[in-house]
Structure formats: C-alpha cells, structure tokens
Image (cartoon, rainbow, N blue to C red):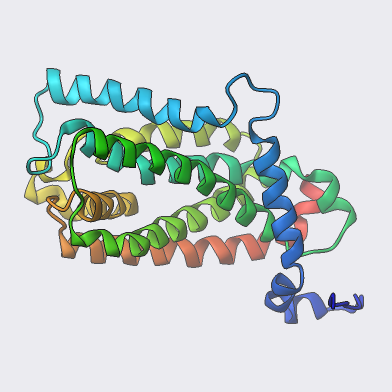
Length: 275
C-alpha cells in the first residue's frame, strides 16, 4: 500500500523535519535521477558511448604524454594504460558530479519555485546520475584487464570503500559549489576551470609516488589523491597506498562534507528568490 503524507505549512516546521522530509520525498529522488539518466544522452548520435569515449581518449593522451614521452614510472608491473584508466575512473565520477550538480538547481528552476521539498535532493540525484557513467566506464576497465591478461589481487574487495569515499568527496564539494552557483552566476565559468586544473594536480596521468616527500602532506590535502591511489591499490594490487595521506584526505573530505551541507542549508531558503 502506498504511503500518504499530509503537508502542513507551519513556521519552523520544515527546519525541524528536514531530514525526515528527505526520506518522505525519496520517490522524487528516484524520479529526478531516472529523468536525468534518460535525458543525459537524448538526441545524441552515439548515446551512452560518450561515457566510454571520453575517458578512453584521455587515457590515450595521458599514456602517450606521461608514459611514452615523459617516461614516468607505472605502478609496479601494471601496464601504464591500466594505471591511467584506474585513476580516471574516480576522477571522471568526481568531475562529472561537480559539473552536473553545480547546475542542477538552476536547471530545475520551475520545480524549486513552485513546490516544497528538500532542495538537497536535486544535487544528490545529479551525483547518482554521474555514477551511471562510472559504471559504464568500469565495464571498459574490465575489458582492458582481460585484454592485458591482468588479474586483480585480493584488495579488490576494498573497492566499495573507496567508491564511497569518492561519493562523499563529490557530494560535499558539489553541495558547496551548487549553492555558490545559485548566488553568484559567474561560478558556472569558474567550475570548468576547477575541474580542468584539478585533473592535472591529481595523480590521474601519473603515480603519486613521484611527488617529493616534502610536498606529500600538502598534496594529500587534495582529497582525490587518496581516492585515486585507493582505486589503483584495489584494482592493480601493486600501487603503494600511503596510509598517512589517506588519513589526511579523509579528514579533508569530512570537512568538505560538513561545510557543504551547512552552507547549502544556510542558503537554501533564498534559492527560490535568487533563481
């Protein structure tokens, strides 16, 4: 039997029941996620194949530039292409979540200005939509490992932990930038720059082991560093996972999540007016 709820307009009620409302409006979360998935590649020639082509082309460029030209080391005996693609998976998820979530509120202007529901649902559904691209790209990684005859080690069982860490990182940063993008529209030009800059300062096309020891603490403040290293450790089995860097990244990720939620909730009341 379908649940029914009565919406009572009362001063301060939404604040007291906000997190309960997230559960009550869970169907809207499913609807928005499924809608975004269906329209993501609507009226495109190759459809969902873009989720494969983009990381594949990036992997080819990075493998040639860093592996062939710069001759940077790979992780253990793993082929350089596999090392790059294993790093591209979490980065693609993070960058796609950032881009989609930051514009999600503006893209749902009519819904926000007419109906009450926890606005947190909208950027959350955008992050889930980005996970679909991740799943498609992961299938390509499996095919590459079969082609290279490379068998993952037992560490693969810890992959869901680092996937959760990637999700929390993406969600926390996305919430903060989403709220900023509503208030300051020029952030839509800054976010692509952040994504592009982050691609080169994160160990996507190279191994983080080449970073000098005196810079490792500062480098670990980028939360995607340990996420990428963790993915390689799980998938390749030969990556050198630095536990101290992982601890720093987890603390930074938790700070981003807390700051993102607090700022989003603080500015949520003005979304309808600013949009």
